[in-house]
Image (tube, rainbow, N blue to C red):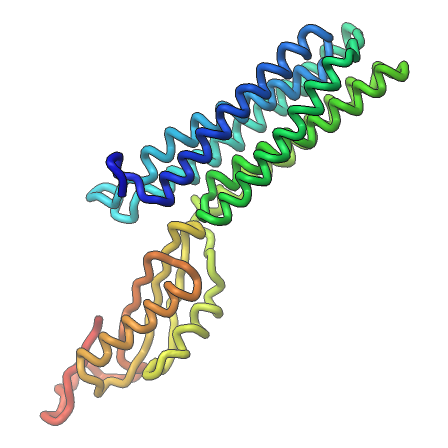
Amino acid sequence: MDAEGLSPRDRAVKRTLGVVLVLNLGVTVAKLVVGWLTSSIAMMADGFHSLTDSAANVVGLIAMSVAQRPPDEDHPYGHRRFETLAALIIGALLALTAWEVLKSCVERLREGGAPDATLTSFVVMGTTMVISWVVSTWERREAKRHRSELLHADSEHTRSDMLTSAAVLGSLVGARLGYPELDLVAAVLITLIIGRTAFRILKDNTMVLADTAIVPAEQIREVAMEVPGVISVHKIRSRGSALGGHADLHIQVRADLALNIAHEIGHQVSDQIRERFGLPDVLVHVEPPVGYNAGVPAKPSEPTKTVV
């Protein structure tokens, strides 16, 4: 932990978001200014798309200041869900952007107009497209490295920005060749790209909030059964995200085992599941076999039933 209470992982995620924010702001200003000067609806739409990138970065930085907090009495499982919440906000921003672009398309159909495809337009779009590609690739790599839903969602957002920039370049080429209507076609294409990305982000992160199982129960069962002394495994559950995942399960061991031995088996199962699936929190309930009569006193030579 550093002076701010951030872990190395959280500090790296926050630093990544800060760098991406600065780059996105530069891209946004360039697109909006040139799009306005050249009357390009596609470029303006792309600029607003980039603006949501910047807003998403700000949301992410705020979320990180909360998500890094350790578990407390009100949040015994920690605050990692705030990252998921921030990713949902990013998805909502994308959906809103798609709606705004669609409205601009309708307005162009009613009022007409054509973009002015200048050399500056091509230079700006080409440069911002390269920047978006570099940022998206780097952010995606950092997301995998730190297992961050937030960085992954933001990299998808930035990647869609690169694709929309390609559509804008196509519309500028069309305008130069005498087909100004391609500006409207590109804007519609941008709407579809943004909408698809928004749907994926909202869907993936809604599944996290809905406590969808993140590890198949059968895989957890197989790992638990590898531990010597485990007779059977049942009541397997998992939830959360790749970083803040939780799992709990019940294992059965011989009823005549001493408490310390049964307890050790439970710990071995927990450790193996943590290591195999990267889950930080695994709870194992140790039980006697089915049919064990807890109401019958144990013989003097037998240890009493233990439940961990």
